[in-house]
Image 1 (cartoon, helix red, strand yellow):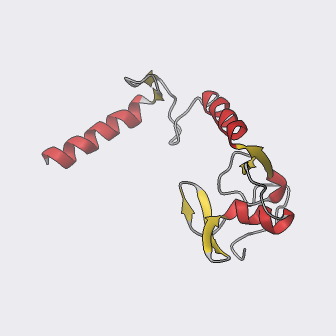
Image 2 (image 1 turned 90 degrees about the horizontal axis):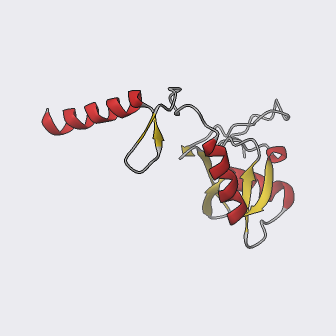
Length: 124
């Protein structure tokens, strides 16, 4: 856990090592685990079967144990769905202003950039 800056314990403590899909990863006891799960184990002991470690702060890279809690997988998924519905802007900061063919929200700026990148890759 050497990749943790604990100077601001009330705030998020971002993992400063490698990230994968926004989560910190660490080699721990012979396995690669998510860093927030290792932080929970070190502070509170093993995660009981059927439960997952959830970020109250919604910051996947945070390893502050005060920002973590145990939930069932179903509870965690339900919270994520509600959280995503409240988002008004894409990860790059553009406002969601359209929907795709599956009804998912998107921003037209990023969608246009994706289409252009695809065209350039396949048509030179």
